Length: 98
Image (cartoon, rainbow, N blue to C red; front, top):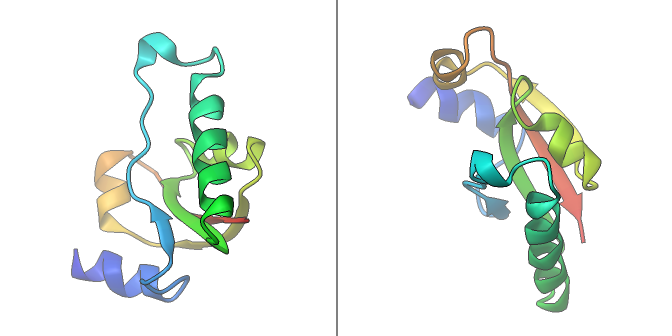
């Protein structure tokens, strides 16, 4: 965990608005549920004065989903946690500007 945190902090520090866990049940994937949920969330953030939202994900996982809803890739970092969770996985950070 320490290696993960040290490497992650080189991309973006803590203290920003962040999505920590966003998961859609597989039975509801591919029909727009995640996009609708995230759209409502980002609208609420904008209305509340949030300037940006960050999310950590795995390039082999949800990176294309986040890019598709307007998040921009801001950097990659090495993480033994991501490697453990997804063989060959690359940890990365995305940001959505409100």
